[in-house]
Image (cartoon, rainbow, N blue to C red; front, side, top):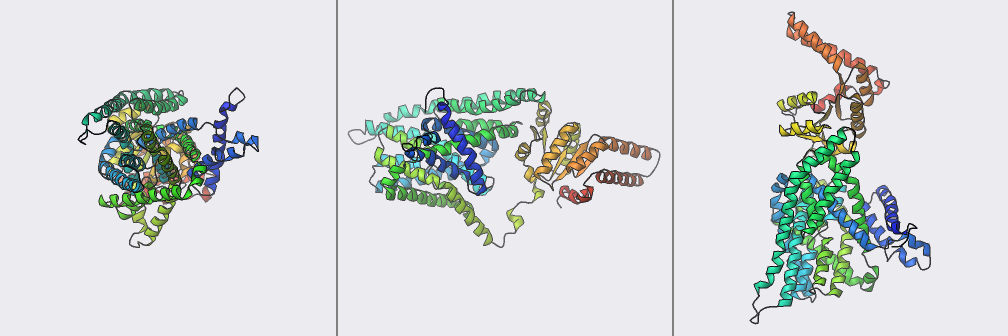
Length: 613
C-alpha cells in the first residue's frame, strides 16, 4: 500500500467501496448474484487483473488492491458477522431441536467426505497423512458464501436451508478439532512410531491439552454473555428511549461481535464460532431484532470484502500453467462431495429434494480449507506444490456456489411442476399461519394481546420502552424492543407473514410513521391503528389504515352504552345501535379522505383477521 499522507494509505478501501457501489446495483439489475460480482471484482482488482496492465498504463495502479493481507483481516470479520447473524436467528432451544441434523447428518457428512477425498488423493499418489489433511480440509463447505446465497434466494427458512445450516454448523464446530488433528498428525510424523511399529500415545498429549483453553474460553463467553449482555443493552435502550444513544446501540452491537470473536481467537477457536455463541446468547433477549437491523449493513459490506479477497487469491498464472489438473480437480472435488452429501442426507431420512439441494450447494470447498491446508503445509505434512494446486481448485469451486444454487432452483422448480398432487397452498403457507403484530404494548396493547390469546390467536408485540418489554417478557409474553417506524425492523418481526398489524401507541406522530411504513411495504395488509381524535383518524385513513379507532369517539360510545343499559334499555337493542353508530362514524372518517373514492372498503380487508375455521 502506498505510504505517506497523499491518500494512498486509503486507496484499497476506496477501490473496494467503488467496486461495491458499481457491482451490487449492476448485478441486481441483471438479476445475477452480487456474490459472483464481488468474486469477479476480486479477480479484476487483484494482481492478475488490472495490475498486469499497470506497467503500460500507470494510472491503472490506482484501480487495483495492493494489500491482500488487509483484505483478508477484514474478510474474517465479515465471516464473524455472518455467524453472529445466524446465531441471532437461532436460540439454544432451536439448536437443541436441530441436534439430530447437526451431530447426526453433519458429522456423518464430515466423516464420509473426508474418507472419500482421502481415497481420491491417495489414488493421485499422496501419502496417507497428507491425503488425510487434504480430505479434512476439503470436506468443509463455505458458510460465508452458501448462507448469503441461500438467503438471497429465499431458501434459508425452508427445509433445505435448515438442513444446509445444520451441516455448516457441524463443520464450523469441527474446525478446531481438525486443526488439533493436524497437529497430532504432525507430531506423529515427527515422533514416528515405536521401533516395533506401534503408535506412541504420548505424542497426543500436547495436542489434546490445547482443547482445554478452547473449552474454557467458550464457557467464559457463555457465562459473561449471560451476565452482561442483557443489562448492557437495556442501559443503552433506556438512553435511546430518552432520545439519546442511537449511535451507542450500533456501537454496542459491534462491540459484542468483535469482542466475542477476539475472545474466541484467544482461546484457540475460530473467530466466527465465538461470534455464533454471542448471537445465540442475544437471540434469547428482547433486543435481538433491533440488533439484527443495526448489524446488517456491516455484515453485507464485510462479506463483500471476503468475496473480493477470495477473488484476489485466485492465481490465474497457476491455473493457466496446468488448467486440466486444476479445473478437473475442482470438478472432481465438487461432484464427489455432492454425491456423498446426498447419500448421507438420504441415509438420515432427509427428503429427496431437500437432500439434492443441500448436496449441490455444499459440494464446493469452503474458506476454512485454506486455513487447514495452510496449517498442513506449516506443519510439514502436506506437499506445498500439490497443496497449492488443491487450493486453486478449491478457490475455483467456491466460485461455482451461486451457479450450483441456480441449478438447485431449476431442479426444484421442475420437481414442483412434475408433482401435480401438491397444491400451491401446500407449497406456500397461507397468511392464516402468521401472527398478529402489535406495535405498542402499554395498557391498550396488553389488552389487545390478552383478548387475542383468549381466542387462540398468536401475536408478537413490539415496544420502545425497555421497562415495559422487560416486564412483559417476565410474564411470558412474546415482546421485542425496537423502533417499529423502520420497515427494516418490521421485516425482522416477520411482517411479510403477519395476519394483521395493530398500532396502539399513544403518540400520534409515531402512529403515523408506523402506519406509513407498514402500508409502504404491504398495501393490502390489514392495519388497525389507535387514533387520538376524529382528525387523527381521518389522517390515518389517508395514510392507508384499514381501520382507525379514535379514543374520544370510543369513549363516548362506551358512556352511551352504559347509560342506556343502566336506564333499562334491552342489551340487544343497545349493542345494535352502538354498532350502527360506530359504522356511521367510520364511514364519515373514510369519506373525509381526499382519495376516499379510490380507496378499498375497510370491511373487505377485515376478513384477514378472522379466526381460521
